[in-house]
Amino acid sequence: MASLVLKGLAVGYPEGSPVVSGIDLVLPDAGVTAVLGTNGSGKSTLLKTIARILRPLSGAAILDGQDIHHTPTKELARRLAILGQDPPIPRDMTVRELVAYGRSPHRRPLRAATDDDRARVADALEATGTVPLADTPLDRLSGGQRQRAWIAMALAQDAPTILLDEPTSFLDIEHQLEVLLLLRGLADTRGKQIVMVVHDIDQALGYADHVVVLHEGRVVAAGPPGEVLTPELILRVFHVRAVIRPGPGGRAHCLPYALAGREPRDAPWHV
Image 1 (cartoon, rainbow, N blue to C red):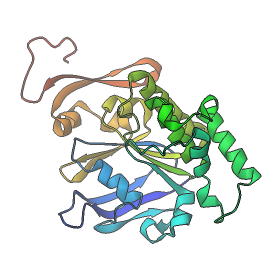
Image 2 (image 1 turned 180 degrees about the vertical axis):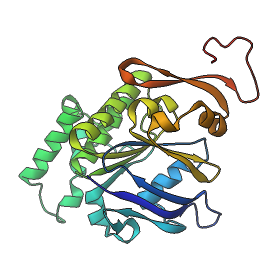
Image 3 (image 1 turned 135 degrees about the vertical axis):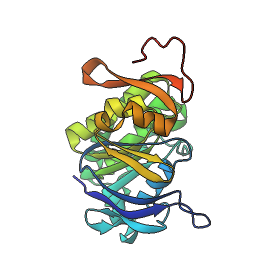
Image 4 (image 1 turned 90 degrees about the vertical axis):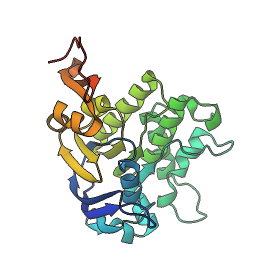
């Protein structure tokens, strides 16, 4: 398990004012955390800062007691993996080769793969259901298959913390569900700390243990999704009227029915 703490964190770009500031959070050591907010609220900027792609404007992101931005690169890669939006496809690389790349932080330069490396790659392929695709070039995969291959690489990396920026973007509903169930399984069976940026409130309600909501440059709510994602907060942050209803398997669902300031004549699930 991994401890991820954000202390007085302000994120943004050096040439501008902070996108989000005053972030003080302790994220759950294991499980799925969903980061929500409107377009431009700073979700991806926050994730990139935690992943050390961007430097914080102030404050710190601390992983297992150590400032991420003061941690040697290879050491950090053993503890944290990140999958960005629509990562580039390496030309002619197969799924197995991509997954094997995840072992790089654990290998010395110019050293051949060890039996442990090969076992970790085989395990990652098995866990993500990509064994039948192992020798297939990435550019021949569907979007959902490709996303599973990238998650397999992160799993082979053996990092306790995995960050994902909109992992279900551009996927149809079947492949969205496939990815969400895979991430949920990694958290439940392997104790991974999953932090993912999402747009869909239903995904946060159904698959996250913890949510962080960004609005107007601040964290306005954080906690269990069933407690945080209320109709009042959804109206305030997303400017839509919605009800939260129970669904199959104990998962709640968000049903939006009107834009803020507009009251429909006939909203069948308006309460």
